[in-house]
Length: 240
Image 1 (cartoon, rainbow, N blue to C red):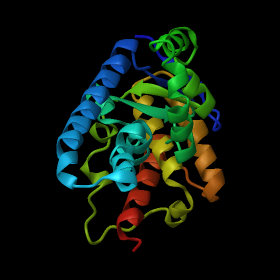
Image 2: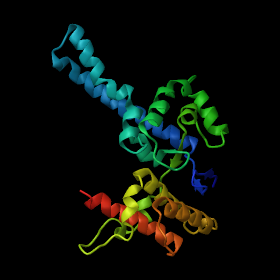
Image 3: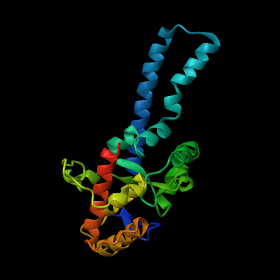
Image 4: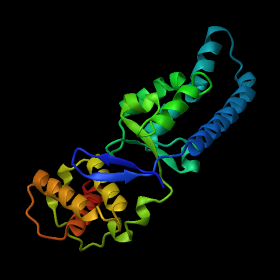
């Protein structure tokens, strides 16, 4: 199976399985279906609003904003996924494995008309022939689309999310890390499981985290990173 090799800013190489053209097109068609259903419902209800003139134009524009900004809205609020992408089990991610920001989603959305011209041909060509399977919007935003058919939660057992009343975090300074950094660590733990590159990748990432938090730990690198993730989750639940 083809993969995308990414050397991250932490100098760790991880692998993603790129979303195929078929899955991306399938997700797009599903999104068009959902948008069509929304337009049909709004159009059917519109005569019941009893509005006319300039006010009617304003109402009409507002009610159709979710369609015009569909991908930007959904990807921003659902971690790089539209409804179609959820069903197709693909998502948008930064090329360094972190979660894209609002600006990245906006660039993908604003450049979508260019990728769709003519008939989606430009975007398809770039996806097929670019090394990271990126359309123009992805290149501008620094993103790509990958498969998510295996959930990270299937790797992390319940102990990573459920804590008894006597639980004491090992690394209290873990709150200095950002959500994006924790997501990256979790991604790395998931993507390096059972692979030959795991030892070196985990060693380099563990050292980076220790340096950032000024931690001196001799725990096994995988166990250390798993503890970091678990402690962060604990504070995310109980810090308030």
